[in-house]
Image 1 (spheres, helix red, strand yellow):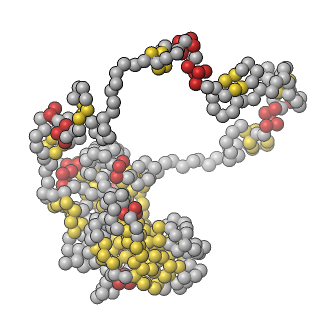
Image 2: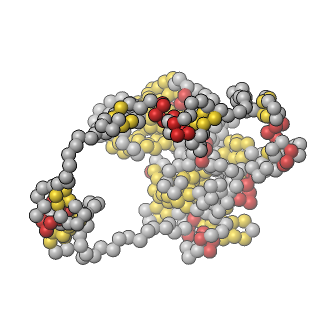
Image 3: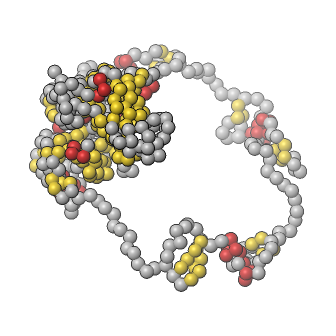
Length: 470
């Protein structure tokens, strides 16, 4: 049976809503998602957790389980004729850890090859706060929390009022007026002119507005880099005794230097335990056991279940299955797939193309196979069976990307040695030539697509899909 794996293979950072967090999620609805003056016929709405600077949050930054466990999986839902598919849930950002996580909402149009047609950089659906009670409230609480995306209004800062005031010279620092309503950055001569009524032509600027040359002469210079000791007439390299002499008025002849200026020899002969965790017996170190850690929970009375963040222990509930996006579901805290015909790995990279740039890095949570030349036999549509690599601006010469398979590794899939599985050549006309060997990917493997080593000055805006069978 073929199963869809699309959501799990998105290269964007995402999230999942496990069964244990039902009371900490919100339902997201919409019936009037529009593009170009009309309702979006077919597309997707995806949510990715980001920080307040719109940077994707890493797994290490998403601690705790409150508000729905945030992971590196994307949460997407299908949009059909402007309506969002039912059963789409997101974390309650009033309960996430960290609190008030931003969700970057992106809406893509399937009829434009998955092009992003709308992005909201920081959406915060919640069961309390401004989302429910504010002047632009878009969420309601009646048992469960429901947020209507049709009512969502992004927060846009007020724009600068353009007036007829003094022109900004466009630089920081001290300014000077050079004409009516016109300023410019001041030069050092403008500052010097403030001393001695503008007649300061030599010497140094003094505190009283005059200028003169300080009396005295000398050639004192800084010592060489590091500590320096003065002889009274020159610098010399210090030795340890110069520092020791500061303790006990120079009479410290044995022991160790103490914080109070005295010196003595500390008592005791304690040593560190062997590398790793250590447990003290009161007189020596011993090798710890797992029970030493478990005893820290519930005052040592934790005899069953799982260790929780609050020091208690219990067995988490679970077992109910909830749909988390087309082709993907969670049941009993386990991610599985639902039955469909084929799957796709969509990708997009709008950055400037550099030599041998990694255009796509797609780790997988499910096993799948890329068919020969990226085409699934018996399927004739781009949506289901044909892979594509497209450019917004065509190249001046044939532009060839290479597909690599990185085997799974405990240090991350990119830490392993890759193997090439083929190439895709894009001609100046946009025609594509696929030379890809059928290749299977196991859980933890990575698909990486790399740009040519020679940069084409015209090629830009890479996007497309890879058709797969899982």
